[in-house]
Length: 557
Image (cartoon, rainbow, N blue to C red; front, side, top):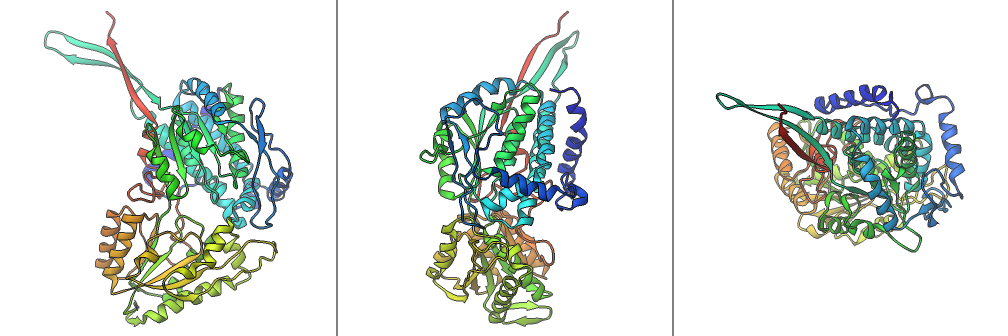
């Protein structure tokens, strides 16, 4: 590698390791797309670069001749095909190339690997705006979320994985002289250790967050010496293709094989995910997506898997200081990106006796109306609605919202298409709310992906807690929100939900929402319930990707 790369990026790596331990706010990559941070023309140039990709072949990847060219993306805002074609390679070709590259990459020192990967993030930073527009027009996220989630927030999550992997591989000395007193003489051995990577990593991406959910596993495998094949969702390729291209460029510049990191896309008539996943040389699999395929991934023999699947997220309402602020916060959380976030709330548990507001009890019916009115107010706000709701990525999600009437309950708020002033053809729908009795478990014990909220009338807060815990333990949960002014109730919620492996956000109002997770501070998914078996980024997320192997021999003389 170039001699100054490690010195250049070591301060970034050390700051990131420090942040891992302190769990305080830390961001290497600013989340605000301000001109004074990224440059006066950065947004315009990014938009133009995105447009240049349309209806062309994506030729930035470093590889020998493509076997074919394929692409299936369409814009949820324009409902038109992007027309971008990516080089297609068979699963056999991708694995063979990764296997050859493995024996080069595994011999690079952890500090050098970390520096190379940080350099790729610095290159990615220069393309945040281009990636933002690519994310908008593949996922349906609004502009600000597209910029933040696929740009700086994703880069920080990648850096977090790099830092964790670097730390774990340098935790122990590379070698030492071991001496054991034996009385009249000492036994002496030279001992050394190597962190040996497991093998080829496969990262299976999702359609809604193509970089944020992909880069943690991708960089965790790379920093620990494993070559990676990135298999994006066929409807959301461009954002992560740009990232892979930057990684490849840095690898080649440092005399390394570009096949250490490859993009593996589906052909229009051939899906390769299962072929890749079942290949015996693929040892590590990171997966984000539906539970059924996630269970299949977890069941594959001889694989180490890191999964994030679907979950049933709950809100527990007990007592609040200001119901209007709470309703506004929950309406935002429900509506954000039209409920297509894995952390979006779905089940709202409200006691039949109502919710204590200050010193008064607000009846159940009034609490439900407050929530519905808050959603309606947000949706109808022309300055906020389009920027918060974005567009619906998959037509099936829009249909699911419109068919939510199949839920056994009373409709409180119906969905409607809303007009986006910038994109008249945008695929949209607004949140729906249904009231469901606590006895109708069949209705609320599954994830209803999209902007669908179920208000579940319970006997009391104890039953709300019991049901939220049951949902998490049986069906998985990635987030939970709770509102209570009573310390004993708060402690009970913490205790019960922790046993269900579910993080809880208490009493959120204002500018922080249950949907949000911060790199270097919040563990995303716990691995403690059926919503997934891994958590990024905790130590297990990286140490399972390599093995410590020791060597020893007598000291000469």
